[in-house]
Image (cartoon, rainbow, N blue to C red; front, side):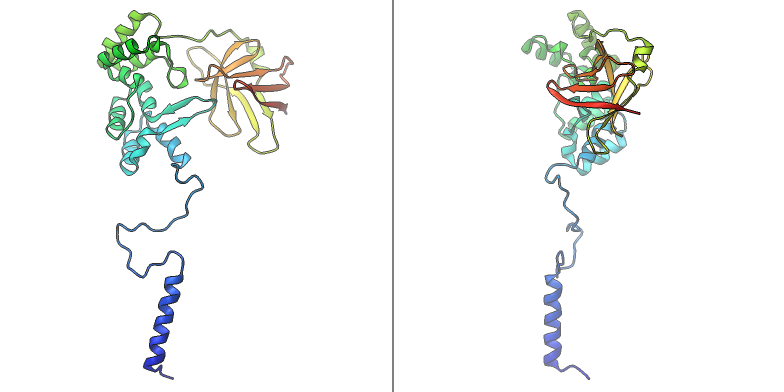
Length: 274
């Protein structure tokens, strides 16, 4: 039966009301500048953690991805990530310690905050001199992963040579941790998994690190997280890279029965499994 003009008007009005009542629906056509509604992450308004971590990671060498990220979200030029145990690294810090001038300058152009380490790598001698004059002893402060200021100057190459010569003349811009040797048998006795809770992530895995100039060494990671290199400080006590105040202590049994983390207070004690 054909609808009367009266019923047709009521039907159209009711339909419009229903459509407008739908969440996320707009009666106006979407414009290119109008974002499509998407789920709001729990971390809002903070930047997504996975994006921050990627930003710092790619700032070591992937200039194309760095440019893509900072052009889309300029605030990421100031991104900082904790790789574990307080080993904080900024995107600019990553570019600085590997000597990637192109990425460093790109980050600064998008709002990254220059610091003593970036100035050193970029070869800004007068800036470095002024900084150390204003803060005596600043040359002994280490950057991400415990990398020294002198190493940043070396990473800067030829354009940072004046800074390198200046830091070398100071004599204390390349501080090294006092490390003690660890016999292969003692090192192998520490390898394994140490459980400290009921969850799948509640395990510390101690494994062999990649070979380095220092020879064979250990690394620790939480479950499937990022491995952190370990420096032996004596009597089965270690500090992770870039976290000199932290201690990971193994019990005296062979193989070790427990692993305790102090940061600097007691954090966890894990029991060996397997």
